[in-house]
Each structure stands twice: as structure tokens, then as C-alpha cells.
Length: 145
Image 1: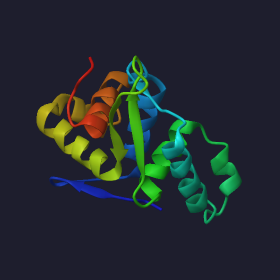
Image 2: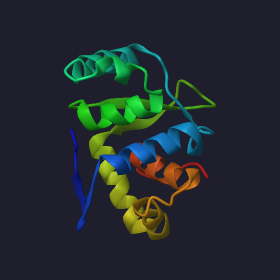
Image 3: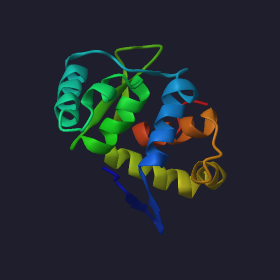
């Protein structure tokens, strides 16, 4: 299912979400974030598994890397939210990744970091660019650099 959303006059799609989330989780943000396997995480995983069970090929989805599964859940699981913690203090929740938060992060990136936003739109972004958008999506501001 292709989920599109509007940011000002731009319509962004699932590919923008997946590429940014994967790049951030696999390299750009891994110096500051921690995803805890707590009760909340297991509840999110159960809802995700239920949603992909309706997929034509749920077995294939289970073999995707975690970063892709998270981006797919963000796009396809109604009300998806994932707690994000501080790597140096795993009990300090920094924020929550949600679809609404991701949209807001895109708007903040477009307004405050137009060069980075342009890189993301051209699919010419690097791990640092993805990190900026991920921080804006999770925390609404840049806390790490």
C-alpha cells in the first residue's frame, strides 16, 4: 500500500519514508538512539505481525531487516508508535516515532534545513541528512550532532 502525505505543496511517498528511516537507523543515528525490547515493543511487534499477515507474502516480510520492517510498520500499521531511547541512558525516552511525527519532522526539515531537505527529495542524502530528519521526527528538534 502506497501511503502518501502532503508537506506544504509537495506530496511525499513511501520511498522517501523507507529510504530515510533505513539510512538513519542503519548508520546516521546509531550514535545516539536505542530501541528497547520492552513490553511496548512487543505490543508494536504483535500489531505489525497482524497487519502483515494480510500481506500477499508475509514470510518474505519477516526476512526483511529491522530497519525496513520499522519503515513498513510506520507506513502500514494504523497508530504505529515506537519509543526511542538514549543510547547512553537506556531508561531515558527521548521521543516516539509515529507517522504524524515523521510528517512534522519533514515539515521542520523543509523549514529549518532546506539544503538537507533538498538532498532527501533528490534521493542524494547521506546518513547525516537522514539523522537530522529522524531526530526532528522523533524529538521535534536536533539534540545530537
